[in-house]
Length: 483
Ligand code: SIN
Picture 1 (cartoon, rainbow, N blue to C red):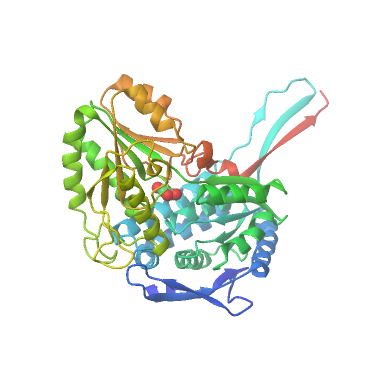
Picture 2: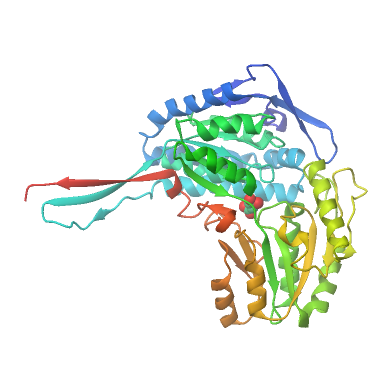
């Protein structure tokens, strides 16, 4: 199948490829060039409601299929994603901007959730509980929650969908996906591959829109929806939680972060530089788990900074489809404005700009990899999710001090530290108030481990053996028997 066959301009509801009721369309733009890539239907509440109803009808039969049957179809979907990885990655880079190499990595990472949960479908065991009396027997069943809505962001247009659709389908749920407004094309392409894999009509639905709040209201309040899974900002997550509360839906929330990355004086400095680079500049800094505050111990500060600056200077800023690109464009003008304003305020408040700090000559949405040093916890930038290619460097003196400062945030998604002292590794791992801790590692994401945060970074875990649990209800059976 060619790239053009996977670049779809219709949404997918109840097994039908359709336009918006109004006939209106929304434009998808390549952030690297500003050129129009495609149009998609600009749907509203009526189509969202139809998608939910279609998912509910499909749920009635999908939930009765065996886990093995669901796993077989999901395996086919996984195989098709892998077969079309090049086309998907090209589409991903075209609508989102990240370098092709990263986009290809995301497609394989995204596909891995479908494979993993196809396997987990067959292992969603209930229990037999030792009885409390001779004449009763206790069992638990695990059953699918029902219709799930998946509201996904633009920064990972493939993986954030599969991380939700994978466990949902494996558990026997059906889904309505609303992809990010900037990046609907990968979602449609994946729905096409799911259709080709034989996943029945209504089990996966994709609704595209330029009015996320309007459509989101239906997806988060409709009584037939039993679970909302959202990845995005903390303010939007809080709004969705309020909307979902009225009908007491299950929720999974993967929200914002303010990740500390701590370089202790006993760290392997070369490895720490490498880890910080990948954690900070992956996807041009546009991930929830990107390093947001880089804490470097005073004794290794100069050594670390010298190597880190050299590595940042060597980054190639270029359109994602250009050979060797390492930093693509940011997603839109709003993102550029935000980064620029964070830097201006930080410098006004006393931070030192030692690298970058401006838009790149590559084009309107490209931003130079930037380093600010002498940043302090009092500055505004220390409390904002940067979501751009900007490193903020803080100094520290002691372990206790840096732990306290690292935890001094409402967020709690990912944290990282580099140390070769085993006792310190245990102490710091236990003390950090985060859902994920990278120890001498800058990349923590994998389908086999639980991804998720604490505090205002959200609730629920995605991936791993835990990821399917949020899509199932536990039913307790109490059986009276004659003995
Ligand atoms: C995210 O930024 O939300 C996801 C990052 C990842 O899966 O690594």
